[in-house]
Image (cartoon, rainbow, N blue to C red; front, side):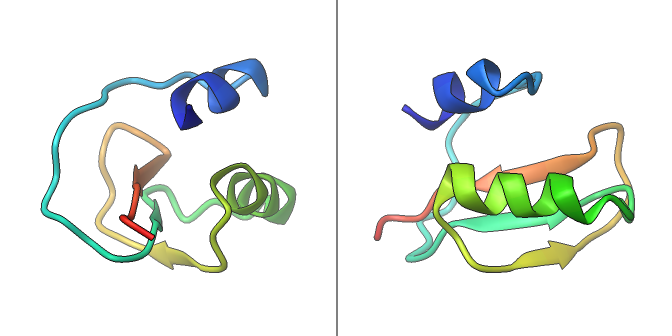
Length: 68
C-alpha cells in the first residue's frame, strides 16, 4: 500500500480519500519545493514519472493514485 510505503519512508500522510478516476498517478508540488531529492524519492515510492506544480495549500504535496 502506498500510504504505508510513504510513512515508512518518513513522510506524514495528512489525508486519504476518494478522487476522480485517473489513469496515471499524479504528484502535485504545493509549496514549490526546491529539494529535488524529495521529488525524486516520491516518484520512486509512487512509481510515477512527473511532479507537477500546483496551487499552494497547507500540504507540501498532493498525490493522486492512478488506475494503471
